[in-house]
Length: 631
Image (cartoon, rainbow, N blue to C red; front, top):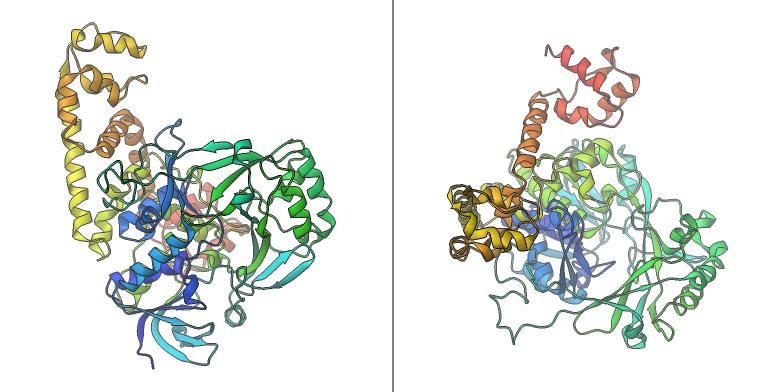
């Protein structure tokens, strides 16, 4: 029935979809295997994409030629740029999405991607020969050959759902768990562990009183994620003002002491507190019972009341993730302002699942034990759609290149948040669900959401992923940025021309003619103020796109900081250039600390830069390695 595929992708969540699309668009024959064709690209938890650091990741996926940004834009019901009050390195786009439309658009895009075949079945094991993966075996006993396999199993590996004292097997509400793969991999020598995540109850929006809540509107200007134009329904160019749909609002409400007291009555039946759940949950997305236990001094906790889509009344209660008994959940929710007559669609639950510590992977996301076998997503201990999607993208790229015996693609920490995430996972590992934050990136002024296309589209095009249209857009953007910078560094502005505007902005007047870029450097001044005061600048900038003008402003204002980070990248790059042998016997180097010897032997870094980032390898150990290598 089946030919030999270049790449088989197991699982069709966010990681699996990106892996399949990337490999297929690079010319590989791909089989996407899923237990249920109706749940491809399911948003298992909240109906949203992006957010702090995650928004940068979606833009990076899009810049490379992945699909997540386009799908998010086409299915968005609200858009917000978070952290606008902070520096531009912190700005993070976020969309609220129509859950059903998101999955539908993803499936349509995959079906329109040539080279992608689909098969509905559970994968029970891998076909392995001579230390290489050569296919999969399904629960129906069908063996399908392939040159590489990407595992993106999400929460399905031996998944166990908990609600109060009840627990039952499942990978998601209403879906069965997957068995067989963990057992086989452990037998082959892999180390496995357990993690936990949770989801809140879903409510009937018709039963809520929104007048008692604080309304949260979307941004007036909707830029979206994708660098391709015409992808989002709110875009100026896509529809006229009268045709454009109105964004859906979210709402904010709060828990209170009475809610907390009711929730505490269920603690003795909580699987988390009783020890029935062994896996660690996400630190930065704790359950509501965890919040009131850990932060007992807090009188209330914020809840975001999020719509699930255009054509449904279903509501997602962001911030109320729980595994307490359903009657306790129901009673507590009814004490929240606006929820007094609340009706529940389904209770919240926790899910425990298998993962494999990611130090067992190389930077390509290929396993060290089995050649041509790649892991992506929650199987690596991450949490979040965006973290999963970017791993899927990179695993798909490298599985495709591995099948064709081409050099792998590895993003460095200075290239992308994707590079930071993969470097963190493979060098430091994780014992709790890993989530990306801007603070994890040491080069975050370089890794902004506005310049992801400048950083990554050329690479995406060179490997056959991004198309020519994307590269042309990037080249035009680069040229525009250069023109704007040249105008600002060459145009001399007279005091009489701008002083009235400067006074109005609360900054000192000019005494003499100065270049416009020097005026822009003032903290009180931005492009809009300059356009208001200098007609020549306004005339010049009217020929450029708003997003490009914004990028130019950021680059000029933060010029010195950007140069400093580039200098640091060059210094770090020197360590990256010093290559290490993967099979070196570090036990011979007695001047290394015992922990460094153990960690280096386990992770097998390929460069001194990678070795320096391994937890337990000190600067003194790096010096020893430098001396050993004659540096």
